Length: 174
Length: 188
Image (tube, rainbow over all chains, first blue to last red; front, side):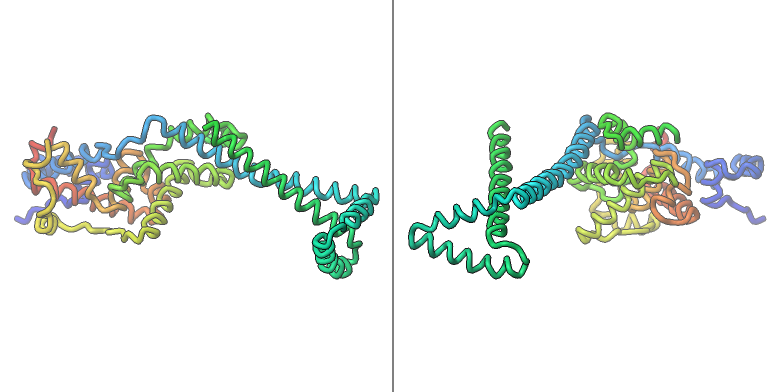
């Protein structure tokens, strides 16, 4: 008489408790059939062994390290953005203030007064020859444009000095 | 779920200790997936770290549709796939060869008795040799107590496929181990 052995999937399903409706029938068969009983024991072993955790442990300080890194990266990304907003706002305020008070004319006179040597004349002429058409194109006063560029250069230079002096201070401390 | 929501709210309000708690809670889940998908990688801990940084950055987009563990698992799995693609490492997948094939091409592997200290070590060796996705499924099911549906969500495959991989993986493990050991040796 042909014997209907249990399939590998039947045994695994039985071990997982998925075959509640065939429970009695399977138990009976496992008691009577040596082949299926052997297979059942082998799978029982595997079901126990797969619970062995082979994954290496992460370092004990992993969580604190990761949390610190995530938060510092987030802070840094905020810092990279925020100073530029302040510089830009400051620059706009400065330009508006200069525009309303008419101080740019003083800078213009100072620039004229500086034309005392031939090299200064040359550089002054060169700057004016570049600025004049640009100012005309933008429909603004040449002296105003000169002041604007000067303020921009000073702001960028200050920004550079502040950033690099900070970095140097930090590197000395570290 | 409420606790998870509370934890997320705390993290989003800038509580670093809360994020540390989240990492502590899910670090084994992430480690299992990374280790099974990219075994023997020297960058194991770095990849786990990158996963949690990504989790932190994406936390504000978490809508709570899936369980947090499933969501983190999905991020981890995708990160592993990205890593393998970037390094041009093919996923040697579904290599659920039979015990006979395995024994035939296993000449360079350690001999069960001579090189491995004991049976438990041999079992660990065989578990680690399961194909990446199968190994991941086995670990998530048996170590993280996840359902087929949750694993399917992480690995982006239907529940039926997850079950099929799991059954085939355990059968492969049984075939490989019983080809080297008798049942009494394994029953420890």
